[in-house]
Length: 176
Image 1 (cartoon, one colour):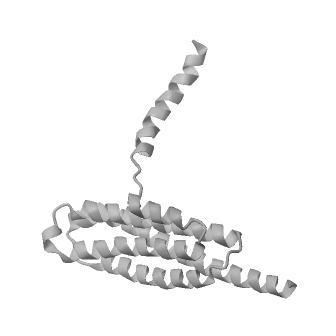
Image 2 (image 1 turned 180 degrees about the horizontal axis):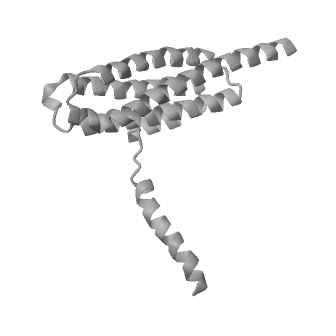
Image 3 (image 1 turned 180 degrees about the vertical axis):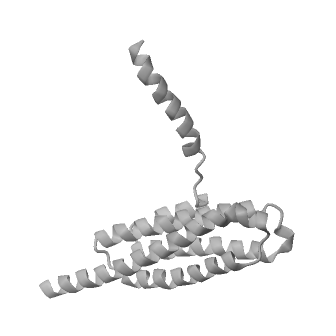
C-alpha cells in the first residue's frame, strides 16, 4: 500500500508528460532526414544541407503570405513552419558545436552560416513588421519571437565557433 503512494503520482506524471512528448513532430520530411543521415561524416555538406532546409521553411512562409488564396488556416501553418525553422536552427547549432569540438575545419561553412543567418534575421523582421490580421499574427507571434531569438543566438554561436576554430587551427599549425 505504501508503495502505491509513490507509484501512482509517478504514473500520473508520466501519463501527462507522454502525450506532449509523443506529439512532437519531426521538422524534417522523411526524404530530408535521409539526406542528412547520408552526410553524417561530411560536416561542410551537412551544414550546407541544413541551411537549405531552413531557407526552404522561410520561402514557404513568404509564398503563403504573398498568396491571398492561402489565407485560410495560414496562421497555424506559419506557426508550424516557424517551429520547424527554430528546431532546424537548433539542430544546426548542435552540429556546429559538435564539429567545432572535434576541431573539424568548417570555417567556410561557418561563413555561409553567418551570411545566411543575417538574411534570416531580415526575413523574420519583415514577417514581424508586415500587416497580418491580428488573429493570424496572434497564432504565430510567440514562435516568431522564439525563431528570432534562436537565429540571433545561433549567429553569435557561429561567429564564436569561427573565431575559436581560427585560433585552434593557427595554434595547431604553429605546433607542426
